Length: 192
Image (cartoon, rainbow, N blue to C red):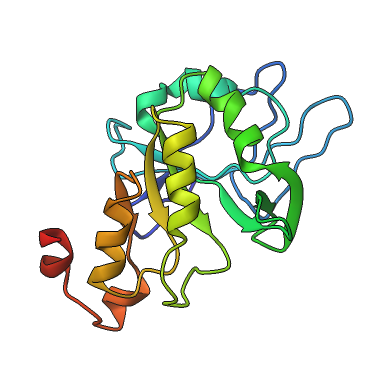
């Protein structure tokens, strides 16, 4: 595999095991009839794999065998969600183009049974819009799954948003556009 020009590098998946089908691109889907559907992207900041990597599981229909393979402490599961008409967060797939019927709580249960520790949850409706984070979503996740270390993503536009996220039980937050548009500095965000 050719190296990627960034501080992140692709990690090749382990050989496919019974019950798992692997893809190194979220754009390419693998749908063999006899196997569950998987599509995910692995990244790790160091070639040694010693630091946590991000797993974006966009189409997961079986137990997470790779979570045990790499170790739950070294994986950050990154579900992207969209709220349905009743306000239930549903896992999105295919680069946010498809909403699934899979509720986020149900999605996380299988991973928790395998020892999941970290998630980075993005509310698609707020991502990149600077409209404020979905504090209710992250508060609900922290209450329902107290063992999870939750990173909130989507909508952060001010230092007040970061302060509000601290009250939800989220362990961290992703701030992209707000920093890019100089709504605040990294130093100010870290001091929050």
